[in-house]
Amino acid sequence: MTEQQLNELSIFALRELARRTGVYAPTSKKKGELIREIIDISEGKKQPHIAKTKQGRPPKDIGYSFADILMPKSYMNFAQETKTYTFNQKNSDDLSDDIKTISGYVELLNNNTAFLWNRRDENYSKYFISENLVEKYGIKTGDKLLVEVSSAENQMIVKSVFNINDIPIMKYNRVRKNYYEVEHVEPKHSLIFDQEKYNIFDIKLGESVYLYGSDNKENTEIIIDLINSSQIQKKIYINVSIAEKNKYFLKKLKNAELFISSITAEMDSAKRLIVIAIERAKHLFEQGENVLIAVDDVLSLSGIDSTDLVLTKNLLSLTKCGRNAGTISLFAIMPADRNIRFFEKLVDKRIKIENDKLILL
Image (cartoon, rainbow, N blue to C red; front, side, top):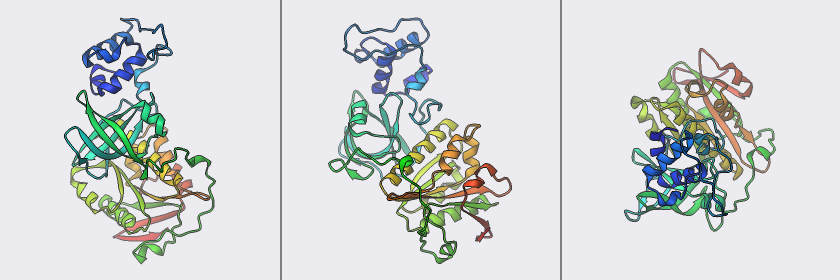
């Protein structure tokens, strides 16, 4: 990690990194001192401090990558945490200048601390979540939290958790179902739309539907109309190629959780965004919810993915109809002239978009 990357961390995350790196008494040092000592130890200019007692938490070993410490647990090969995630959340309810009640999505880091990402107007803030809170509630990447944050040493940190995934904390049970352990059964129940023109396709809950169209604007309008018309309550819209001229489309979305990034955003930030969206969908499924994911579009998604398309694979293979659990259905816009054929085996229905009409293929 560079000095600039370290400087972007909160003082709490920096202290945790310093403690595990081998910096002596990190809580007594200022931010600049911590950064300098972390770099010196990483470059071998200074030996790490090893505590002689059980106090403190010295590193178990030396020589690991600092970036690995702060990586999301699910995708450790991604780059250092960045600032370009976008979520559709309610604005913060200010209680005072130093205490606020906010909602956001969790990004769990490899050192078992986390960040909560919150949208306020057009800006996005991150709030440090301590290891104690993460362990106390079993917080995971993709969890949606309502929390109280407060200022400490000029940094905003999560102080209290009020609910997790819309469940009040007093009723919350940290023992959860596991997406991968829920048995998949053949989809039988239909996804119902307000507009009858979509019901004729008889799309089942837990199916994957690919949409093929040559007009990007028309593709976006159709997929937004589809999810708005769907009677499913939990909807996730994913778009990693938002341009300024296309932002007005987002205002048309109704009751959907938005996971979007600008077309000019760094690829690593967009990858982190997809990780959080994938985990969010799994947690809703585990709660017994019917979830609808809209991917706009797969070509853009694969463009920011690694060479083995690990994120695209994970996202497009999420569809599931669980026994005694929820369902995940998916709509994905595929390129009309250059299909990503590897994913064709996952599709249940193919629909062509042509002149504002949908044609079942």
